Amino acid sequence: MSVVLGYDESPGAARALRVAIDVAAAFDERLVLVYGAAPPGPTGEEYRAHYEAIAQAGRAGLEHGVASAEAAGVSATVEVIDLSPAQALIEAASRYGARVIVVGSWGESPIRGALLGSTPHKLLHLSTVPVLCVPTEA
Image (cartoon, rainbow, N blue to C red):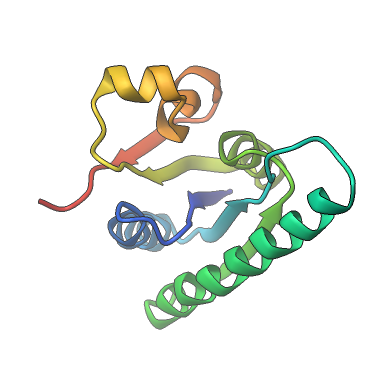
């Protein structure tokens, strides 16, 4: 089993990282840091260039997460997946047999999240794996 974390260096991601490391350590599980790298737009050269830029930004951000996990004695794996964040997390959770998916929250209202399609909101409705939504720090 594993603990899957949606990690993108957003304001909610730092606290979610700490919580995910604690959960992975408590259950002696591997931490899988996931970055959904699907760019907007359907196809073509712009898609490819945009995808590479997004994927590179994701890889750079994930390095911090891996270093933090390893410093806490938790083994970590990185996945940059060419899907939207919610779909990438669901796919990784299935592939790694996740115990839980951990995501940070931006502190948006539930209505705004529902209307704009926040990742935590989508996961709560689509995931068959429990979702731990970590609020941002006050």
